[in-house]
Each structure stands twice: as structure tokens, then as C-alpha cells.
Amino acid sequence: MIQRVKELEPSAGKEKSAAAEGSDSEKVMKIQVAPKEYDINNTWGDFDGSWLKWLGFRDRFKAAIHDNVDVSDSYKHSYLVRSLKGEAAKALGESHEAKGSYQEAWNRLSQLYNKPYQIALEYMRQFYRLPVLHTRATSTELQRMANATHETIRQLRALELPVDQYDFVLVHNLHERLDPETARDWEKYQKQRLQEMLTKITVGSEHRNKSKDRASAGSAKGNETGRETGAIPRKFPCEACPEGSGETHPLFHCPSFAALNITGRKDFLRRRRICPNCFKKGHNINSCESQKKCGLPQCQGNPWHNSLICPFKQNTQQGLTATNATKRGTSA
Image (cartoon, rainbow, N blue to C red; front, top):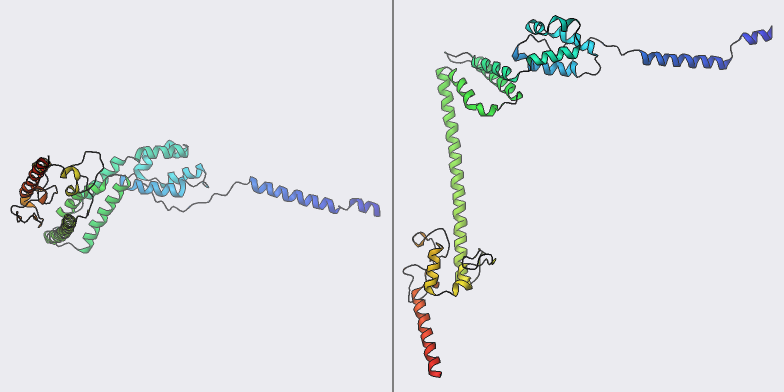
């Protein structure tokens, strides 16, 4: 009897095995059970076929349902059908509502209402339907006009239309709907703003011109100082040196220019339209602002010219040349 009892009693190994089998089966059951889909609260609203409501409904529905991977197509189809009202439900058709697939229904709805031109046209119609104010505008009426305008601009920009280029048209439409008193106040404000802008532009322009004048005066002063002391204040492409030589010295330090006689130097300055007094381009002797005159005592600076083209200097050079020639002949 004792032996029989032992045979009938379950062993500890069998109990563990049975328990393990039970846990495995439970795991299999848990894996095979489909995730429970629950009713999602409608945060995307309803769509009745209005062009003004389509973009908002489309974006909200896509975020909550269409792009939600945890919602099956059958549930998506149910949510979509229950969200459509009026003309939108009729446009989708009974076949799509009853047994059509979700993707077919969504594609059909997008095909009917994803029309940027029609949507933009409807927003512009709404904007031009703003009421005309005949009495003094209240803050509520002005706020309503501002809200409608901002919504129109926002939606047109969402459609990637160049709204910033329509400023004049939009402002003119709003101005035409203001009462006379508010319109006058607005025009006065605009004139004030325009005057402030013009003042800023004028002051800025004068400041830039003064800066240029100071820079030009400093440059001219530096050139005059260089001519007096023999220093080279700035480097410029030389007008007299062969093109491509790379020489950047001022004209009054150029050996090629110095090799010319007085007549040749004057002719060079005339052809290159260079001022014969300061040796700078861009003006003539009559408009030269340099206060430096010819330094030769015989000339006394009248008329103004650079000492390198002074006729007295030419006469002196010719006299020295003749004297030297005479000495060479006597020596011979």
C-alpha cells in the first residue's frame, strides 16, 4: 500500500515541469492576444466640407489618427467616417462609409479637398467680406478685423503663397473698411512713421557722406605730406609705368614720368585726365581741393600746377643743358 501511495503521489520534478509548461502557455497566450484598441477622444473636430476648415482638420486628424501606428486601419476608417458631416460625408459616398478601406477613403477625401487655389480663393473672399464701419470703430470690431486678417495671412503662408508681396493690397482693403475718423487717425500715424523713416535715412546718409569726406581729406593730406617730405604715404597703381609691371608708387615718384620733358608730362596728364596740381584722377584743376602750389620761387604758385610741370623749371633745365653743352665744346 505504501508503494502504491508513492506511485500515485506526483513527484516534485513533475510539478516543476507542469508549472513551467503553464507559465510558457501563459506567455504564448499573452503574445497572441491582440492589443486592445480603445476609443480615442475626438481632439481633431468634425469636417463639414468647408474649404476654410479643411487644412486644420487634415493636420489634426493626421497627428491623432492617420499617423498613429497603434490604431488599425479598421479603427481609422471608423474615426474618419464619424468625423465627416454634411457635404463632406456626401462627397465621400456611402460605399466608402460602409465597406471601403481606410486608405481609399482618405485618398478620396484628400483628392476632393487638397486644392490650394480653391482654399486660398475662399480665404481671400472671407477677407474681402469684412464689414465696412460707418461709425467710430470699437476695440471689439478692430480686434475682429485684425483676427480675420492674421488668419488669412497665416493660411496663405501655409499654402506657400508670397503673402509678403501683398502688403499694399491687404492694407488698402482694411483702410477702405475703416470709419472716417479712424481712417484719418491711421493716415496721420502712417505719415508720422514715414517722416521718422525719412529722417533716419537722411541722417544716415549725411553721416556716411561726412565719413567719406573725412577719409578723402585724410588721403589728400597724406599725399601732400608725401610730396613735401619725399615719403610714399600710400601705394597706387602707377599710371606712367608699363601695364603689368606691378609698380604701385605715386606718379610724382615715378622714374618713367620723370624721364619725360615738361611738355611730355603735360601731355601725359591731359590724356590720362589727371589733375595737373595734385596728380590725382577724378577732377580737374578748377575743382582741385589741394592747398599745395608750385614751390619754385620764380612761379609763386600762380597759376596752380605741380612743380614737376612748372615752365620755369623747364627753362632752368634748358639753360643748364645749354651751359653744359658749351662747357663740353670749350673743353674739346
